[in-house]
Length: 87
Image (tube, rainbow, N blue to C red; front, side):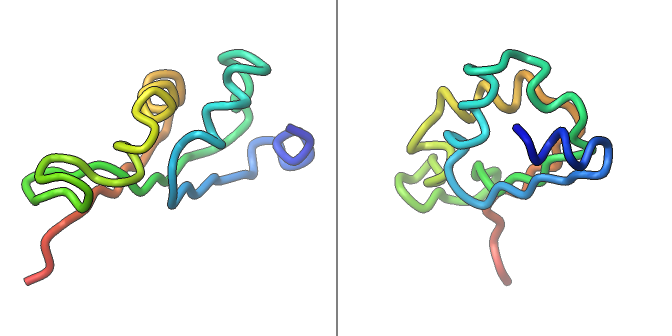
């Protein structure tokens, strides 16, 4: 959490994998772990397209759904980038 404290209100977190690493500070430090983070850009989920691990599921959220739920529930300023179809 040192980096969050060092760059207070000037930090954007980009999560392109499982949400486990982002959920752990919430478990260790509580709901205010990321209070000084400006935004989260997360890659996960599949909407209106087939998933990449099952017909309904995308790998990043499927592998650790509890972590994904925790991050989405407890954080603010989340920009979610799900799988999309490429035409």
